[in-house]
Length: 282
Ligand code: PXL
Image 1 (cartoon, protein in one colour):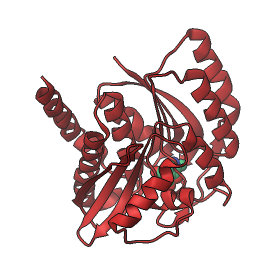
Image 2: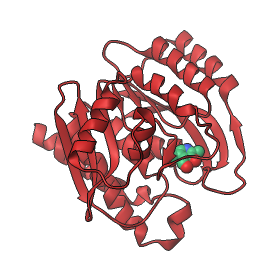
Image 3: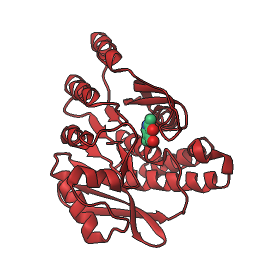
Image 4: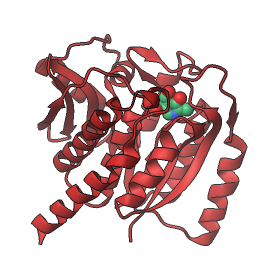
């Protein structure tokens, strides 16, 4: 069984980060270790959230793992609380990275043109350095603009997407994936490019509602799919289709808006898709 470690916050209320990564990766048939970076009473969209950085705990925990000889097939990072935590994660990459494990960085810090509360304007500069060590990075459009110096915009024609991906690759990652693309009125897109410069686009229906945690749901599913050995083109299609299916289900439940997406109800869809992929391979 393959083992992945998910390095991101634990928000007690508001489905995001670890509370999405653990169940999704388990449902995908992966053993998922969790390293929580910050403990929050609720995610940062809730007024008055209480936040405790776990910076002092990360090194002792991973030192113990090293003494146990733990190995990971993939290292997946999401929301990190500070520049110091980025330095600690770089050390984790160096301690646990091998020639053939996957380093997957979701540079969580912003959406809808703005940094999330609590991040200083300098944070994206430091996040750029983390992206350098990654095999795969998955920024949304806002994060991709912050990482590349492009001005944020709400419409994304193909030439802009290509330029964004080329600039992201120049940060040093082997594959760049951008989510949340709006190439026309009715679609939402995801695009990937690797060092060969081949653009791969996957469009899904655009559903005009905003839910928290969809980026984390995409990243967890995509990291899981790549860890299972799917090519990037299939991993982005699976992850994007699962997110859209989940948004459709969540949109019928007005209560869920602040709590995140109802991904629990659509895990059977994800698992069915994985079985279909496996059957095609036999
Ligand atoms: O979904 C991204 C995310 C992750 N972690 C925390 C957040 C957010 C977005 O608001 O607040 C704590």
